[in-house]
Amino acid sequence: MTDAKDEKLWNSNYLKVLTCNFLLFFAFYLLTPLLPIYLDAQFHADKDVIGLVLSGYVVATLLVRPFSGFIVDSFNRRKVLTICFFIFFIVFAGYIGAGTLLMFAIVRTVHGVPFGASTVANSTVAIDVLPSSRRNEGIGFYGLSNNLAMAIAPSTGIWIYSLTDNFTLLFWISLAIAMVGFLFTTWVKIPQREIVANKPVMSLDHFFLSRAWLMAVNISLFGLCWGVLGNYVAIYGQEMLDITDGTGMFFMILSGGLMAARVIGRRQLRSGQITQSCTVGVALSSIGYTLFAMSMYLGAWSYYLSALFVGLGNGQMYPAFLNMFIQVARHDQRGTANSSILISWDLGMGLGILLGGFVAQYTGYVTAFIMVACVQVAGSVLFVVSTARFFGKRKLHN
Image (cartoon, rainbow, N blue to C red):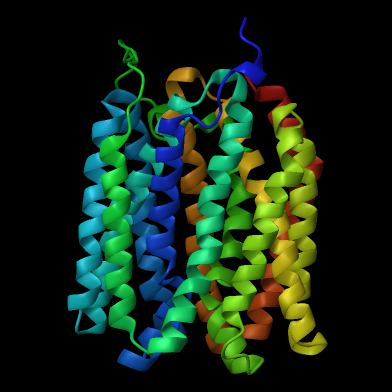
């Protein structure tokens, strides 16, 4: 048997897939914190309308992801990834041409389809190119790549906008980044695999990993928290804390926390201490969201410190959850396992975007973020009390 230390984690195909994933999320989330500001400035949309428009892509993503997992498990994964990523890249042109709020809402919603399919295909290809003895560790770094993109991209977008005051330029930059990501998909080579024959024609597990239902509920709660924070932090800082240039710094601190978490959590994942790593992550995130909710009363130091704790927490929590989903699935269900965690995360995030907009419209942003802190703490308690034990009973392999 080959020793884990002898098997190469950072092989060329894994690096290509990691780059694809980073660029996919970077292109998408470069725009995310600025879209509420754009919709307000360009179309004079109310907060609840902004929430509806921005949550449209999540609905589309949720509709396509169950089928994406089945398709990825049933057909050539590299071809599926290339086609989906190409469509994802092309749809960015729609933002540039959308002249009305309705057209923008349609483009944003449509964009959720290739985004959802590409994330499932790419994460499944990543598992295929990883050596089995380094899979836990590799999945951890893979999860970091999209977490890091979701943290760095918003700060980059905010910085570019502060220099240029030009939303159209940001749409073109996202288009170009997505094109580079598409090119990387064409260079990936994955090992041949045998398509499992004689599967039941209709089965829930083709579309969602029912064995992981409690884990899905749990991570949906954390996705809800991220949905509110990621989409409304810029406008919250601007309106409530009079922080106009500090949102970029917020996301930079957040990304620093994510990277530090991977260094801290790497050994635990490699040794199989997945639930221990996740417990630390959800606890740190709870501290972070609580500090953010209190920043209106405690001041800017609480606002920026919260970014560090949320980064440290999510950097340990999400890769651990990704490993848990993979470990309760059969080897021929990797695509389904990946689509299931992404469905769960996006369902929570979509609810967060929608709920955050409505709560902010009628009770204010402070109340919205206090709600988020409560949800995060409730999710953490659920994990410690029930989900960790649920996973231990259902995992099939390491």
